[in-house]
Image 1 (tube, rainbow over the protein chains, first blue to last red):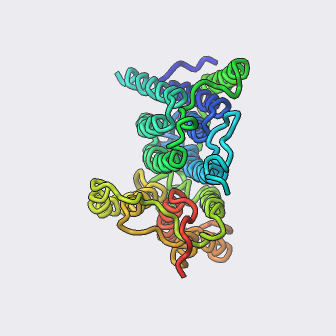
Image 2 (cartoon, rainbow over the protein chains, first blue to last red):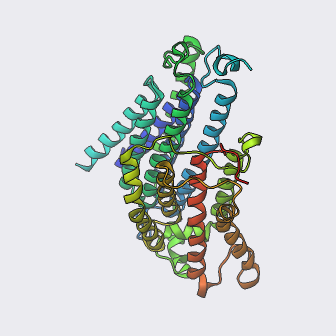
Image 3 (cartoon, chains in turn yellow, green):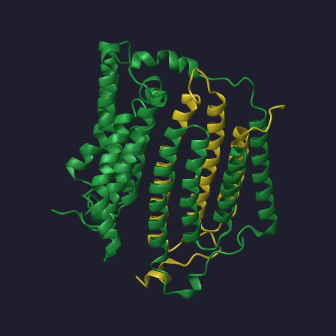
Length: 116
Length: 320
């Protein structure tokens, strides 16, 4: 554990912090939409750690190892598609039940939508 | 000097993340998240990963931001008049203090573990860069990241396209029965004038930028994802301004556009059995034209898929 605190590892530490903040949001935040944002923060942090690994792998005239970089690009696109699916599920849940958060009492469908 | 800049950048990223977690209104959090995506793009530039920076700014900041903002507007709409239910989220009512502290400790432990892992990375760092450089000539490409995406690890990229399509299938199947196959609705009843103006002025420029990004992607930062995202953004702004209506999700041309790229990719992959060494391998003399052809079809498919993912499930009954 003797690696010096270089600017590159600084970004890795920042990424670790982002994962923690995002995880905390996903576990505790009452708003479901905010949990989706937290999930994206976790992703951003993990990608940054990958970026550090890519940057440290600079060799052969490249400024970074292209393999982790390509993995991150794939990861960003997949994270987006997961986000889109989660948001669509959340909108449907809201349309059907009026719920948008994890508070103890959700407004019932009849309350927010009028009696059937 | 640059160390100071890096320190400030990381500090801003963490501060913004904290703000996103703590602010009361969802909308504030989402706007902060868009700013966060742009700053994160800068961080990627500092890590010398320009391809990733472009992708992060376009998808992480841009398209995700539009998706979240429109969802937030949808979630606030029907309950707006009911003040009792419209209170902003405050406190952590559901978990209680003990639960919140436990969650904070667990999150901090994950952060500490990751930080230790980052500090303990081996020196010299393992790298595949020399291998990627050695094989670069056989692909005819100049951008190693594009070579990894479309040649060395083409299987990952192919499967990722399938994931995008699966996500779209998932989103579309959330439509109620009566609107199945119909069009999603994006534009507000009255689109603001500046948006309509932008939607007329921006797309010509955006399309040129997208084509440029796709073309230089072979040799310089840029490529399929980035170009596809810019195209998707242009289509979205036109639909948001109400200048063009979103197509029916059952429309044949749309569906062809969606599966065209991955289908061509898969077809060339199987062709590799006959004209090259096996699945997803290209014969050396025509490797570059093949890759560019796949990339062109993929760019259009990605643009259509991303735009449709943001547009969401069908909300109008299909036209007869």
